[in-house]
Length: 575
Ligand code: ATP
Ligand code: MG
Image 1 (cartoon, protein in one colour):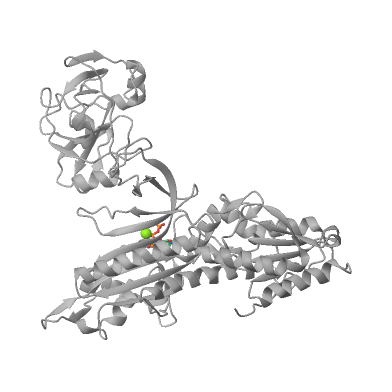
Image 2: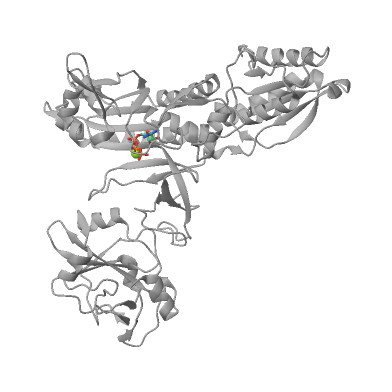
């Protein structure tokens, strides 16, 4: 084990802050700024100070190792890219205002790369020629630029951020699937090594047929995605989860129209009838691209999933009040019995087993109870329409689903021939024919995952870095400076640890003990060795585990050996 350089707090540039930055809404943003890891330059743009940069380099190294372990080779592509490339793929127009665009002095137009599909496709298209050279898998770690409409949450949604993006090129579907599977496994290992609690989540591009893709979600309240998951390993975005929904049964003998002089909402209906919302049926009217009008029915306590609806209908729009009136639809009181001619009934699959529906009667202030499918009305189409919620059942094992929010730290995606077709990137296959490459693309948010780690590992005192990405592994805190015994003892332990290859920082600042304790907790060193006058008299120092909070006295003369062993054992847990 080679020695590591002993860091000294007096040499570091680490201006920690007592106050939270005013614009910080979430823990990672607050703590990364206060712990002197990052500083804001502009909205969604941050610099990394030395401590944050140490974390960043370690995190990048973990990502790099896992890419190399699956045969993905590192390269470096430029960030300034000619507009022509983006015209070729069609994304110059499609990307919209999120794409940063600039002109040079000759009025040539460029984009700042938000991602690198165009550039890598143009790089390989004339030089990767034969099936014999395939598959090929390449990655790089660089800044990305996206003029996000709402940059926020510190590193979670920036306008300048660091991404690891990998691309692979395959001769056929099987090869693409293998590359994709290997990449997904590597992403799982990266999550584990970062100490993240995570789920691979079925994502969806909204298109009919669906693309093969998976998002890696770190569970955190600050996350923008809402997901359901189950102990059996199933997880999906609530928008696309195929949860088993069980509407409540409503007992009725026959169809009965009742007077309901209420506002036409599910809440009002449930209250009026003294039944749970889950026993009612909600109706929404839509028009699809062909102009056809449908009423969609879902369990009353659920929301319509718009991605699901567009899978069933293609592009669609909700009818506004005027259009509803025009089509003879009664807002707030729609139901499947007695709808105007030509209006289709599309119902959520969960309602198949619901014999009697409580629904609108297509008449102001009236509802039906006991409307029976097949007897009182027909359903034109059954589709999965409702967004999953807490209490719905897992589609795999049937247990109740948990609900959580998640941060998308990475995504794997089978692109197929999207870019190789539009940008004419072809290879010569075994049978002598020219074919477009099958491509995969795999993004990992380096700076976003750094923030996700902090979201999952913090307390009131500050950050609790997992050992794998901590700015250093052990901090040695001499509680008095200028004391004849404390300072030399602390320096000795710190030097011994560094010589043993343990990343060590010595808080040699002439600060009060309280300041050193607070900063150590805030910055989040995984282990602290506290050297005080009284302890030394008894031949002892204190070892604090930042994660568990556990403190114990250890013998001064064995301190370096013991802590080295503790750190080595902890390291092994993150490999
Ligand atoms: P989102 O849906 O959050 O906007 P995305 O799906 O557009 O992200 P991708 O194009 O899949 O993102 O990019 C790959 C990865 O880059 C994401 O999984 C995420 O970790 C990271 N990333 C994307 N946008 C940002 C951003 N604005 N700031 C920080 N990281 C980002
Ligand atoms: Mg994504």
